[in-house]
Length: 100
Image 1 (cartoon, one colour):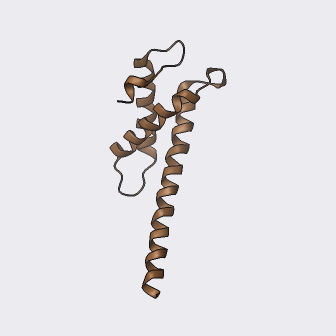
Image 2 (cartoon, helix red, strand yellow):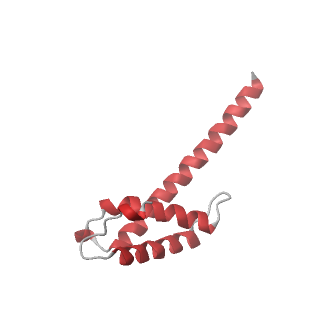
Image 3 (tube, helix red, strand yellow):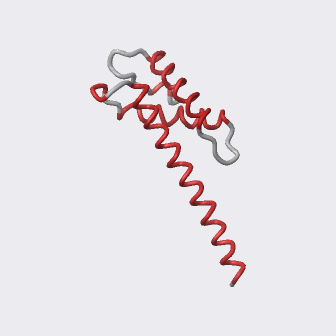
């Protein structure tokens, strides 16, 4: 799984990083909901975004928690935007096809 490839930032253990990721996932899941996604769906998606974003973390710029919170929120909102775009596109295409 993804966890086995995780390289924690210098000075942190894997468990510390996973605890921070869990905090970020819980916070965003309680604040951001879209479509038919459950809080657990959001939590899982945020966890993946956090794991993917770990390699971009620069400790001199701030805490891991703050970085992951901003990074995961941006990725989650981008995913939401992409999904909304696809729904709109499907609706427009459907309407167009009915006209021809």
